Image 1: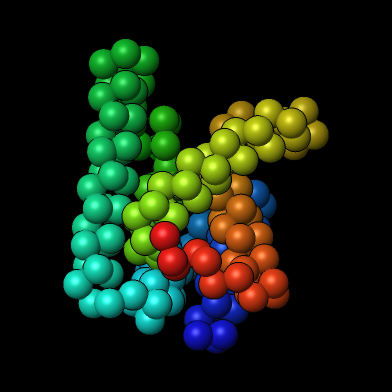
Image 2: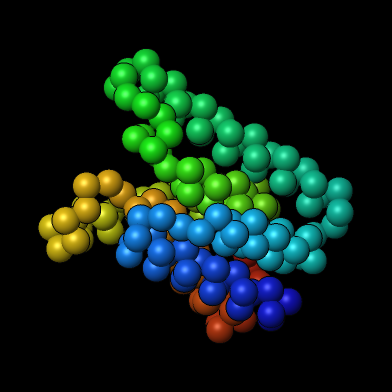
Length: 160
């Protein structure tokens, strides 16, 4: 489990680095992150509960993306992909949805989005970014969560 946690942290750090530096993340990192986080989740849960949580998380993620799509299409009248949200962000959302029980996922997902928006607006003038590097900022948040959980020995991420 320690190796899976370290690989998950490294994936999140690489996603953050690439998203900030190049605004383009290697697609290989998303399935690797999803696999590692999914295995960590699976090792902490019963099989049926694991599949229930994954299903609920994917439905929640898809619902969020559907609302974002409807908003960009009908209200803001902009293209959804690569204008409103990037493909890397979508892939990150789904990789993220494999990693935690539904309650933990919902809390971490909401906190990571708030963290990303807050940090973006705080640092916007320093980086001259026009769009939010959402996958990178959420990856940074998730790396901190995994690091805190790993080094402080708090397995509560999987008990909710």
